[in-house]
Length: 159
Image (cartoon, rainbow, N blue to C red; front, side):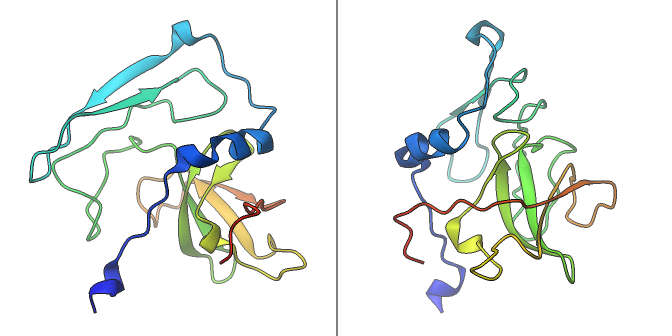
């Protein structure tokens, strides 16, 4: 069916205040050390360039390596350039340790993901849930894995 592969997207900027209220202990160095990378999309049809602002010295935000967009996309299992998407996390079920959803690293303590990725019993939603980062391939064995202490779900999410 046409809806089988339909994507659902959210304009995250609408939730910035709520996200910042959760991670209020995040500190960012002075803007003079920030870098800006302009990335040109190379998929057909040609899309306008995308400006990706990345503060590589920050304790929160994107990864240290600038994003590298190639002419191919990950869709269908094609590889990303090594370490170019270091801000991406894999949210996994602890047993049988399978990838469940993707997320974005906001700081050393916070991952942002879609609310529908929330799994586990209502009494303790973080049980059986881990975050894996530092991989280029979903099957990489040399990764950093952390357990989840707490899950914050936006109060307006109706699931």
